[in-house]
Length: 185
Image (cartoon, rainbow, N blue to C red; front, side):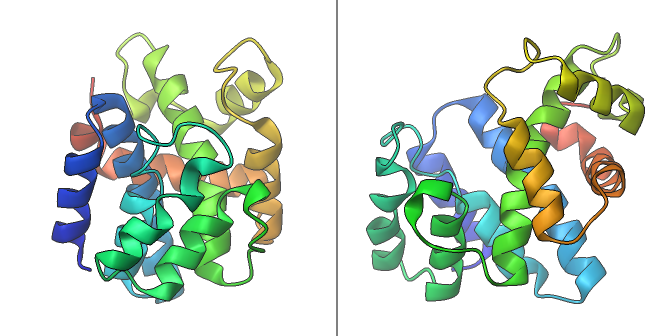
């Protein structure tokens, strides 16, 4: 599975433009981390793109991502990528052990939260989002209430990252791809 085939899979299963952009946002963060760690950028991109590919057909836990995993296996997605996707759901029973697994978990909820933060900026651009405003919004339980704050905090902690540095890193990664994420203003 390469990035192009992963994107085709996303487009086949995901009709929501917002969900597609979420997967692209997670990809932006993951590829930036892969580059930082000297990891395989395409593998990390594929993992990010496919992590929620089955959300529209299996929107309830524990169906997502467990029922999507056999679809990916049938399409030749590696065990390593499928395991990372399974591990991003706390209820899957698959512990996060590898850097890939921990990074996917760390980037998933945060990318969604950063998108929400950008949407409330006057120009609706990720470039206007800063760490201080993100931290303030994390405390506001009414803002982006679907985002699990514990996952945001624990994702950084599991990777041994300072939360502010992780937020800043992901803002920068998403800013590089702002146009494709619909966050360029």
